Structure formats: structure tokens, C-alpha cells
Length: 360
Image 1: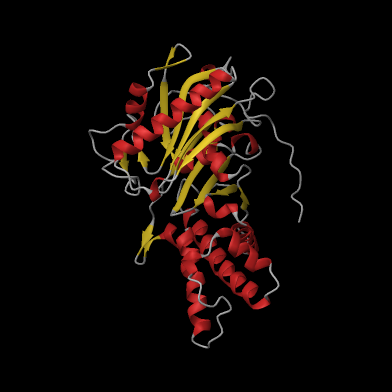
Image 2: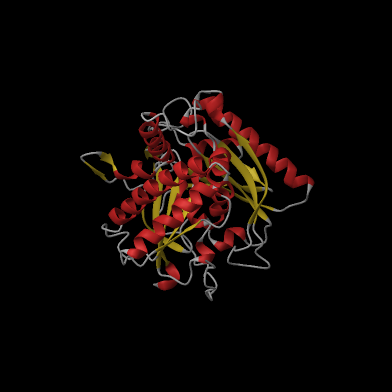
């Protein structure tokens, strides 16, 4: 069904303090992020992660296997990638398609349950719309699960819409970094450097801002990016950071060749709870090698020392939670509501909720 067009007022770029993991950002107040709600069965968010979907599909397969009726045969569930799942769901094998749909239905019910629980918190009570990102959103299976969860909530009278994040999740995690910076830091520049750190990959990119045409950053886009899958190499923390710095230096060289004016800022999205000094308080356990939560380690400071200036100006490095940063890519498109949220469906379920400062 086509989504009804909504007339949106331009996002207001309100000035804010520069810092890490802050509640007050240029355009929004971060009401919450990295919620770790739990009950007797464990963390609530774990029920709507990518691995939860895999577990759900595996359970359906086990039931059918007892009757010698598993349409997927010998292939292991964990070996089924997003493309294969999409093909099975839309293919000619009706039994295989029905199996995937059954898993989607169960996962959607679990996701709707997590959203219900989030909305019982003060930070999520008035959330009107949710953007769903993360790797699972990339697939048709993921998009269907998101739409089904939204339908389930609406059928129960919960007036909240859930829609896939507009940009590709890999790009949203970079584009959102531009919303960490006050407008004055971006003025007169074409692009910024952005980093998205995850449990399996590190992505670095150049985000073209498009400020001259759209000051609200609604036309911001990834110009160049590099992906390193550190999970395949199991590097030490030091080696991982050295690799990241090399990626950033390579991107800086490319912008010089194209005569793109880089702002002297680097925005980073990283898992976990981020302190105001840039240290990771907790949640960095899946990051490559070493203790990222050590009180003696500060990633933004390390990068600033390695890349002390950009374009002749001192480099400013700003870091926030990765779900927050991915959600910030939606700022220009959430100006018709006061409060909104994001969930990122990946290894875990990232989450954040926001209040537009233009609504204050």
C-alpha cells in the first residue's frame, strides 16, 4: 500500500555543544539509547535480533524435520544468507516460501512485543514513529517482518508506524554522523569523514553534505566508502585502529584529488554506552581484540592524535552510539512528529529514541 505523502517542515539545524555520547545534539534531544531491559528470560531486545530470526527459522525446521517434511533439506539454517532467504520466500517452491513466511510472522510478533515493552518506558512513551535499520532491514524478508510488526501494533490500537530506514543501513550509519555536528562546523565544506564500527565490520566513508541545496542535510549521501570485515581476521585492538586510520587517510587523499572541501571533523558510530569524554562505558564486548572499555583507552582521542588536522584545521572527532548515529540519518524526514525512535536489527537489537528540538 502506498504511503500517504506528508508535508514536512524543514529540519531546523539548532546549535549544540560538541561532545561525545551527548543527550543534546544540534537537531534532537536523545531521550534514550542502548536500553538494556530484561525479564526472567534475559534481555528483551535479544528476541528481535538477526540471530533470533535464525533461531525461529531453525525451530520451524526442526518441527518439520520430525515429520520428514523440511523443504530446505540438508542446508544449515545459519548458512542461509539474506539473498537466499529472499529467493526462497518469493520462489516457486510453495512449501519453502510458507516456511520462511512462518518464521517472519513469529519474528514480527517478537519485534512488536519488544516495541510494546519499550513504550512502557518514559523515554519511549510518546514515540510516534520508528525507523528500522540494521543489516536485517536490507532483505525483503526483513522489510516484510518490519511491516508485519507495524501492522500487528496498529491492529491493537497502538498508533505508531514502523518503516524501513530510508537510506541503505550501511550508508545511514555514515550519513547520520553529519547530524552530530553543529551547522557552523559544516558551513563552507562539501563533505565530512564518517566511521561506523560494528561487531563484524568497520566502514569508513566520505559523506557529501549537499548543504547549499538542502541545509537540513536531506540530500546528504555517501560519496566513497571502504569496508573492512575484521571478523575474518580477528585482529588486536591496536591493529584494528591502525587499519581504520589507514582507511581514513586513504579517503582524505581521494577527496584532495577530487578537490572536495572536507570539514575538519570525523563522526563515529560505535556500539555501547559512550561517555562524554569519548570512552566506552560498556557494550564494546563484540569489538575486535582487546578491551575497548578500558579507562586507559579513548578511541576519538587516538584518532585525533593520528590525524591531527584536516584541510589545515585541527581535527575534531565526535563519537556516539551506532544506533543513535544510524537513527540521525532520519532527522530531515521526522520533522512532522515530536518524538520518534530507531531500532537496528543486527547481531543485537540497537535502539534509540529522540525528541526534535524544533518541537521544544
